[in-house]
Image 1: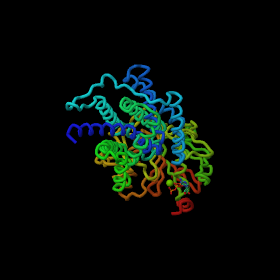
Image 2: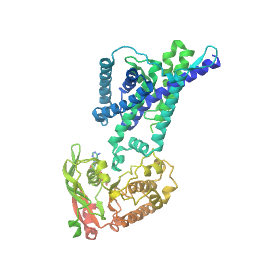
Image 3: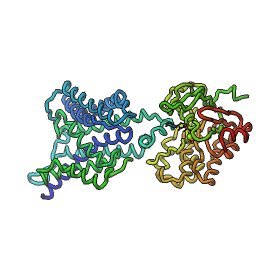
Image 4: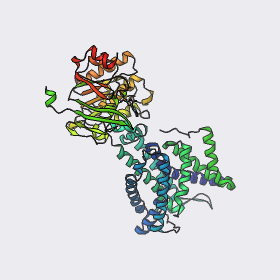
Length: 288
Length: 239
Ligand SMILES: Nc1ncnc2c1ncn2[C@@H]1O[C@H](COP(=O)(O)OP(=O)(O)OP(=O)(O)O)[C@@H](O)[C@H]1O
Ligand SMILES: [Mg+2]
């Protein structure tokens, strides 16, 4: 592989990893703080992608579609938490799996009713539609760089929120001792709602910004869900920074796997998971 | 008898509390007036912690009522009850091990009732100079005494009118325990009411105005500290 092909794969791998991180961070946060295994998390990615497509068709402006989509998915997250997820906090994982699996079916059915079962392409926004020429016949699309940049900014924003703000301190405190948080006069339910809505919005945002490169299709949430669980398990369940590292590893292994060992490409991430878990059964980072 | 005419800060009436099927509190009446210092005594497993946790809504009572300044808060969520000026230092201390010492303090900061902000971060550190040397340490890296100072400091950051300390000096070396007692004296002098649970009855009795003694989920003695005598101690506390 020459340098430019390598560079392209490297950038693709990082971009894919960063996007996975956006989805997986919400999954791991919700598990780490509320103890919920949310199988429907991939559906939020799917909902985001369909929203981006539908809103972009309506408004004719992809950027506006994404902003509107974020507002709508935050609202969706707040409603879902209040109506469904709140009842799962004190329950066994079995109930969580049953209900959230049920929600996947509901979301897919609603998707089918509202948006149909067709595959849709979403146009790359004009602002980012250029490509950067690398050699005579290789170039790199600006939009992919823009995706990576947005992901990095969101990850940075999350870092600041969780590590540097009082709300972040309360969120982390809630993960270790929610009773004590309440005893200090803090409304833990409100914090749970916020964390959940944040997770929904992050997954949906990932779906929205990925739509122009991945297109929009039924069951796209299921694929993402499985790979996100791999990310969460490798990173250490509940650890956001573990998820970041794991997502980048998976992005790179998957991308280079497809190039270097195309016959076994589908296996590469699972081999990575097996190796990491043999070395560190709890994942790269312990919860925290 | 000014205590009777004034509405108590915190009052429990006829509390019955259960853990699943086991009936733990059997109709407990308990109150704390503004500025009062009350010892809550009783042998292991008599229900002291359960009484505290019931009043705070952490283990809601099945029967009976809890009032804060005369307001019925029996079914209120814990954060609403503690927001009305109550701070809690639990058994086992409840430090957040994944937060630094500084974060443990800052996350709790808020104005007390009537917007008072007497206990600032700076004042808490002045009161607990040891903590200011450990600010960036994780909560779990502290010694037992430092952890207790941190929980008390964290409780003060909420500018409470009432501080409830469950097992104030449990597991602490005598020298550290004495430091904690002195801090409680300072807190009391600042006008904050306190409810203290501790096994060191000697130290406790020099500090409090009133004693309440629990036996098997019932209050068997509730009177001024002067009325406490060896006979009662022998009978109910078995020391
Ligand atoms: N979570 C729980 N589930 C079931 N039973 C409990 C629970 N917590 C306490 N108990 C029981 O309730 C009774 C009262 O316990 P509690 O902790 O209130 O006593 P205590 O007076 O605070 O004792 P100690 O001095 O040991 O702290 C005990 O018999 C105890 O075994
Ligand atoms: Mg106790």
